[in-house]
Image 1 (cartoon, helix red, strand yellow):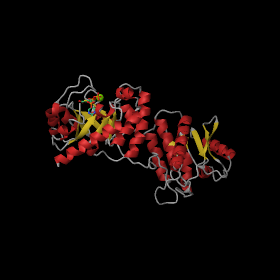
Image 2 (cartoon, rainbow, N blue to C red):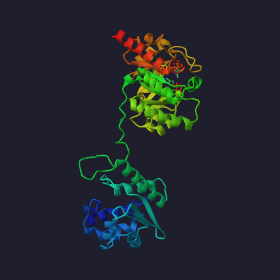
Image 3 (cartoon, rainbow, N blue to C red):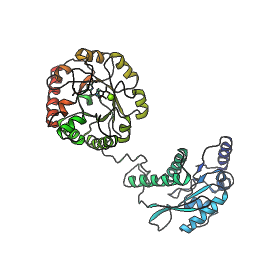
Image 4 (cartoon, helix red, strand yellow):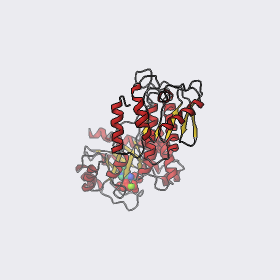
Length: 414
Ligand SMILES: Cc1ncc(COP(=O)(O)OP(=O)(O)O)c(N)n1
Ligand SMILES: Cc1nc(C(=O)O)sc1CCOP(=O)(O)O
Ligand SMILES: [Mg+2]
């Protein structure tokens, strides 16, 4: 929004001094709602200075008309005429947006690159939430060009994106005005919002195993459903033998179930699968991707757990931005080959050396869970188990039994 000739001139001067890779000009003058956003005094400087520098200019019908001295634009043929006439002013490409075209079922935009015209159609979405659609479209074109797209492809992607966001946002109430904005990230409608990580989530930590699921004829999704039904408070998909595409599909399906029940879902080892499925986080070991790198990739809101067998590893996990520590093997286990057992003493040492919440793992079941929780260190928040839950016919029953034991152990401790 460039409200005065002086500002347009200053901008053009700066662009000459500091050339940009691609210049997208949305000649903001009249909003979709009909508001004047810049007066006619800027038209000359737009025509003479700014538009000739532009790689693309994206006027709506009212702006295109203003740029051409007020010619009426009411049909697609008029839009083609306008695109050509504006192109003659100097920009390399023109997109005349027909969102305000009367009596049209589709939203038709006309793109002209100096040689060919393209009519870009999308369905017209009836919604009051159209505030900022033009800005969004132009910004998306700029983003696509920055990513290296060709102009027509950038325009098509931008149009599809605006259509998707409008369609998604059409019935949402956003703000108090009569014309609302779009929900650009397609997130607000989600009824189940993700809550922040709570260390008490570690209380009964169910870790899946593809071999065990196969043995008992359970799908990953059924196994996760059953564990949640039995009272698991967090789930980790530890699927060492599945194909990436199957892992991703399973993660997405499990995530839906977990979200409904407010149970966080973590992915073992595979940051890519966690990112692609939008899972709540990852669990990584000492030979997996370092936690500080995972943090950069996943951002501040995802949960990152790190396996630690020693105080040094525990201190490093804190420095690297982990949210919790998985520490074991507390007891010998058949689930993970060549796993070093650190015992209850080793677990206690790790707990005492870190500020992070800790979950114990390795050989833990009904018979020894109380001994583990009985260690009585405040940051030991729960137990993580594989075979006790998943190497069984009825996963929900076994989960329920373990939950009772864990609840009993907290009663004893208090
Ligand atoms: C909660 C929890 N703690 C520890 C581990 C082990 O992780 P890692 O050392 O990376 O070994 P793998 O599980 O990848 O074989 C865990 N998965 N979960
Ligand atoms: C995955 C894993 N990590 C361990 C560690 O010590 O870091 S022990 C382990 C296996 C846990 O399986 P179960 O509950 O069947 O013993
Ligand atoms: Mg690992």
